[in-house]
Image: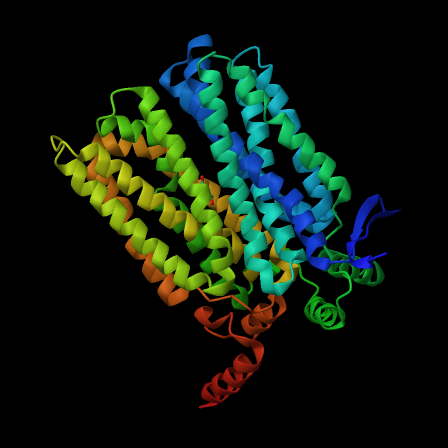
Length: 490
Ligand code: BGC
């Protein structure tokens, strides 16, 4: 029998059922698809409220402030959840935390679906937010740690693809149930992918990198071998081992001087991903389109669906490019597109009587979302999951991601107020200006991590290379080390 095609359900070991595939990539892809379900739930549960709130508002007779509370309870939960998740994943491992994420998603969905009053609803939304926060951190981290280096960018970005699919899925569900006015169904459907995620976690192996960190060398090697199939894993395993032995890290390491560039890069990326305005479009697209002249809510919702689909399509286009062109070119290109579209939107809103305004608004939103989807969307998550040293990858990335939820909340809670205070054109110009700052940040600070193993990135960091050179392959960087060593002697 052709062994390459044999898929055999094999052994139960430390509560892990493993599907053994002799072709290693199959194994990695199967694992990744399950792990990325956390991203789908992230997209679904953040997107669904835009439609559900229209009916919840009537049923519970909510004030404007109460509406804001229902919408932003998720962001608050996500901020807390992602802040906690670093410690959780470092302590309990990546897989167990994914199981916890799935269970929390199920609890939160059920609590909101059967909420008898506003308090329950807000409570359920906070629980959902915690699941989103923990999942938004754990899934990309896990994916980065099990991915072979050559396709790491693509695999980690599957998570972003799943987020965008979840958003479209939520828009479709909104559209379907809005005619029937059944908001509990809208919220309750989130249980389905959450249950699939829970089932999937039974099959997921623990991250070999984390196992090594805990000192379980034999288990780590066995799992890495199972994931990589027939490949020789000696070199990869040695590299991980070396990194782990260099320093048994503590959370205080996060304050060490040599780690600061990484903190700066990751906080900067999460800042620019949010303050350049993505969620003004994701959460408020129908509102913007109505401001631009679409009278009918139906038309605005349909256009929003279109924007969600463009988001998915361009994320798919970016997946192979991230490892082929690299992270930096895509980020620079994307930020340029985002700047141009926001600037045009600002100009169009400056002349409100202009007949073509609504089409310019749609066109600019399409360019904006396509540019985001090819750049800051996937790449922020990717770089954050790559650049922290292994010992503090958990806490470091969780700090950056919870900051991102904080920035998200800031933008989502101020957007409508800014429009009232400064008008739409100045608001869009403000986001356009932030795109320019983001472009400069990427150009001067953000490293290219394509083709560089996570261990090499860490070694470069320890060698003290400037932040934008952290992804330089190690043989080139060790020459640089000599330079910087000698220059420091001068
Ligand atoms: C961002 C979210 C955003 C989504 C849109 C994610 O990368 O973190 O805030 O809603 O992309 O696709």
